[in-house]
View 1 (tube, rainbow, N blue to C red):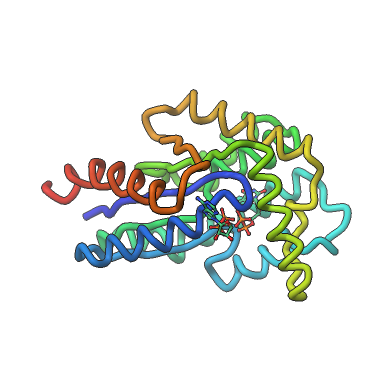
View 2: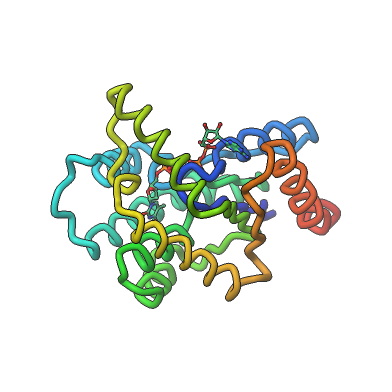
Length: 219
Ligand code: ADP
Ligand code: TYD
């Protein structure tokens, strides 16, 4: 039996992890088996790749090498966490997946969509999300929220700001690429307006997910 693969996408600080926590609690209360994971990271090997990728002290990482590391992390997560959970019929909630690579490396780093989609074919073994929730708030507000959070994490001594410290033009290219993906893959990707309360967004996500889950659970 195959479970259900749900990914969350959006700019840094768009509220993905907040919504994943709330949705996981809701689904568990309804009796579903849920696995929550994130990218990069989510495995021991992936956490080491994550540290290298996000540490702002990582210098001169070539964009193509960065692309390769994102997919290496993903291949490990698929093998170790995602596939086994789906094979057990679990619902997998994943904070970022290939759309992030298309948006950040394809758009932000200007590698283009093509190399990302081709690598996805090779590295992800045909695994695509059943549903993707894309949280898109107003661009300026998203950036301000991400910067505030970045300042807090810098003050706490953790160092994960390599992408968040990119300039505004980089984040705008990421944002535009997300819009492009949503238009191209409107069957899979549901865009949720991020400028709403946490509760209002949660209710919309629950509605979308329950609608998609119905045919799966009654099969
Ligand atoms: P992400 O996982 O996308 O980086 P988070 O869920 O960590 O985002 O949220 C970033 C910050 O914004 C957190 O401080 C969170 O409490 C806050 N936040 C999340 N959703 C909303 C919302 N809808 N409105 C206002 N603040 C929010
Ligand atoms: P993370 O802290 O997990 O995300 P967020 O700030 O949204 O909570 O940071 C992951 C960073 O890595 C984020 O800035 C986006 C970037 N990233 C890519 O550039 N490409 C990818 O394929 C993935 C998965 C993430």
